[in-house]
Image (tube, rainbow, N blue to C red; front, side):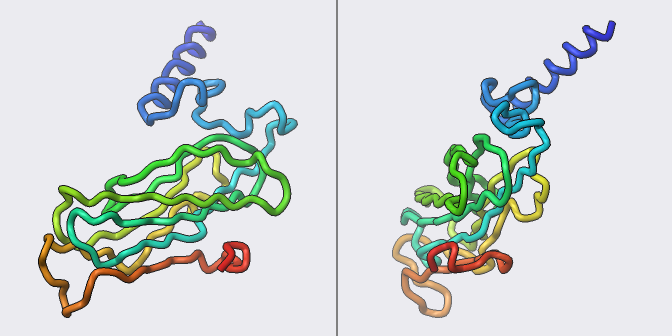
Amino acid sequence: MLRVKTAMAAAALLLAAQWAGVPAAAAGNGFPLRAAADPNVGDGNVNVDLAVRQVTVSPVRAHVGDVIRVEVVIENKAEGMSTTNAEVYANGKRVGRQLFTWGLSQGEDRLYRFTFDWDTHGVAPGEYRIKGEAFVWEDTSKFDNELTVPQPVILVAPGSGFPGGGTTGGSATETDPRFRKSRAGI
């Protein structure tokens, strides 16, 4: 009976991982993105901690159909290694995703930089809050797995003017206040 329950639990976890978009190969031992299960880490007691340190968006005033560039800096603050997604959201809707493997480098080179191009064709005019995110199930401090730029991106219809008479352009950056800016190269 115990074997049946264990097999059912493993199958349920694998299905949950697949439902969440995790490839079956990444769902080692039935647990999605299990960095602590890496045989190269030792006894499995690994402190996993990714942090989104900086998000930059430009332009912040644009017309529908323009491309908005979003740059995200993610830091591996701890141990372990695995593969996860760096993602960008506009008003809660994912507009960019890049798979990356972290934890391969030792020492100071623990920063990962990503550039996303959000094509706004077909997007409704309005204000959009941009968020960068890197989620890992085993992360020991999930509070720093996302970072939102407080200044919204303003999209207006093609040929329309901007509120207050502004022009296309501008940029906005949000940096985690706990992050040493010298590490980001700024």
